[in-house]
Image (cartoon, rainbow, N blue to C red; front, side):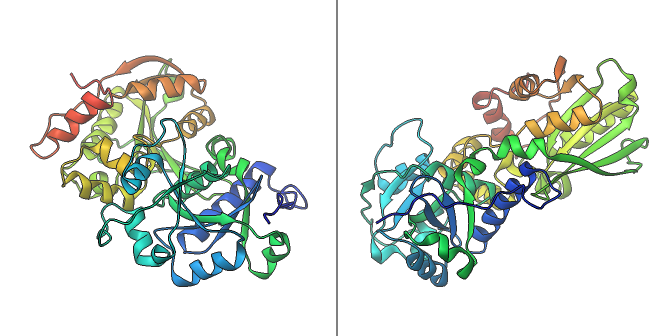
Length: 382
């Protein structure tokens, strides 16, 4: 017997935060529990309890069994599912389900099923496809919000799950809130602090910090000169890159793009560089390192992301548009080689009146990376 949707508390009751921020907080609490190996309830038609395959321990697996009614399923992103099931999967689906054999329901096998860089399972286990639960897309989306590999073990919640939420300290989140996360995160973004910070490449600089209420995720705007006085100031959307920006990694061109953009804006006398907390095109630093390991085995940057279960580009450019609007900028020239950024900003209400090229020569290590950006992502590097 499966349960009906759980009646979650009204997020707007007795709280000074807007309802959107409270729903965002619940999504982030759920993602945080998954990162810690704890089960989470996704509420909706036939509620699901799930754990993340890469963080599941024996305790989490036991807790999942105590909270569910029915055999567990393995939920996977489509490309990862094709590799695990050893067969093509339907195009355009957000999640694929397989029956979960009991002998694989333990931490090490689950990590091997989730992570193509982990030691492979001995032999070639046979996993049979299963009917995909209605809430599986929300489960995969929640794992991605937590920057986890998008593979989970899930089962229908017990019929009395509502009474067990408090007893088990189980976090519950509505499926619709998980799926609405990108728009909600941009909607509750707030400017929180600012200070003058002279930079070596741009002495007349000010850093403005933004935070999404309910999630705590922070993004920065580096404001050079007085861009508000220009008709269409130079703007760059720069996703943070720990390895390239801070360490000087030669595998990418991010560090050169960052410092080159600051110099260019300083030369023009004004500009804004948005430093976005979207490492690895939105997959996070740990997954970017996994993608690097797959690239060392012969995959390019796009296929490495997809084999991990991620899309080619998982970034949310609504965040960038909201930051520009709060800075009073609605018409810009974009410093980029990526036509997707042009289209994304324009779709979010920012008028892009021109594109300024921002290409750097290969260094002998990132040659193939740059070639892939041009050939497969459509970047304009000529």
